[in-house]
Image 1 (cartoon, rainbow, N blue to C red):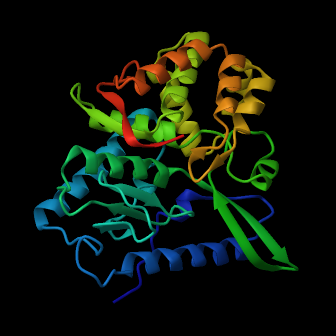
Image 2: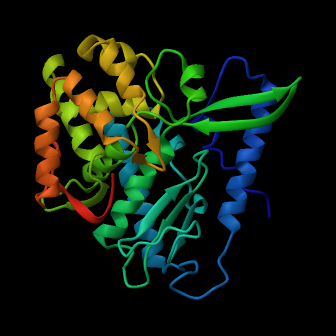
Length: 323
């Protein structure tokens, strides 16, 4: 049986101009190898910890969910969305995460190079339940985001490489040097999830109590100052984020100013959590959307659902809540 090539990986991987064709071939070979390992890895234990075997009907449902995500990406303006989405073998479905995450709500994880998704669904939950489906849509948002590769070389040989999606700074090398900064992933992923459900009765539970209201507030303010709809602002930003289009930097600076954008890009994050919430407060104040952010956060903390203008459904706070 021929090896799986995972042909979506080159489309999702961006190299600096300094990377030679040989460097690129080496890195993609390593990423493909990791994808093969994850797709073939099994947990030889029973539920609730092992791999979850799906029925033919459930497999059809998973394919339908991926197709829905693709349609939504295209409607936002993401180019060649089908080339960025995972094939079925890149989605490991388990009762519980093999990476140590435990949640009664289910969980998800996307590989650091965007090469696989682990979708964890507790034994007591059906794969078609909204809580389970929301985790897959969320991870698909992470998966399709193109990764920028930074190489470490000794002579002509690549000794190490790192891969990550990053914020909108002019100098990509500087951004990569500082690691993961800028709240550009979790909030938008939750909004993308809501957009995929596209149902007035949809209710998404989020652990990202800071990032979701912050994302809604700054995108709404961006729309107001650009005289466009919030959905147009979301589409513009989401497409730029997915394709790592740094021309969006100019739009951000034109609207919010250099100081605010610099601070936005340097909000510190560890394991998807905001390390210092006051950094978001400062950015919101500089961007003149502090009151909106505080209001949305207060509503979320009080158990109310919050929404994004132009999207159907609401987002509520989950008890297992990340800062």
